[in-house]
Image (cartoon, rainbow, N blue to C red; front, side, top):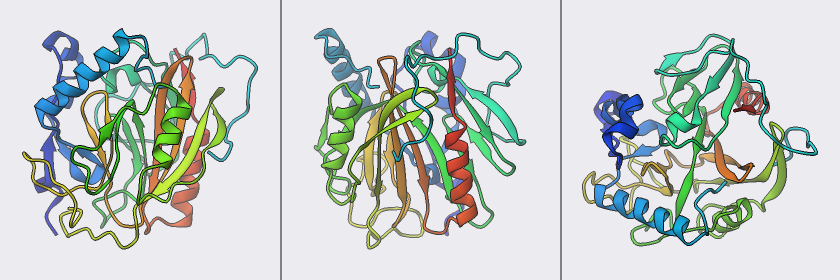
Length: 294
């Protein structure tokens, strides 16, 4: 199998230098394919940015903001008094057991829209930008992982995806309903959910067990980007022009599509078929620990 370091790709950005200065390492550091982040053709990235701007101008807005986890509250708002003692995650690192803050505005594109995520992890977990996962020796792809996304465009077909991207609409219901209609994903019916005091929609979807992936993680028979030329099984595009692609047959994604006071956030908690019952239980435990602070 190709070494993980040989499978890194740089993530292209559509960003002005001053807006991106605080997180230059994300634009220049190599990005592992194993964690589901793909390079986008810059021209497509510009198109995404222009589309988002047009949608915002006409007033539709691009602030898009599961089994029922969490306790409903009468007025869901982020905690007014963030705990200054909680460390904010920055660089890639192994994590000690404990509670950490993730600055979503920093990792999802630099806008001032999101509350911070506060998350508690047990021993053995790892952090990389908007990814929190539990790696395991012998596997390039972590058995379980949590990702945070500002979903902008959905691929209408995950394998023959060229020319199929579309805007799902601005609400959590819009996005959930659009995902359910994507073929090959065997999506569950969306259900109401609360998490960290906010409401949203929850669903699960998966990669077909018979979808072939080669030793380098390429999805055999699927479309490939003109620049990267690696076939991918794709899900969506984020605001920062990154692409969510899947990593293997039988991968299951649990999706919390949250409305954070009008801003939509997707929490994507995936598990691979080789994840143990203990690892899956830890994934649920970490998700259940999530709360939001300004």
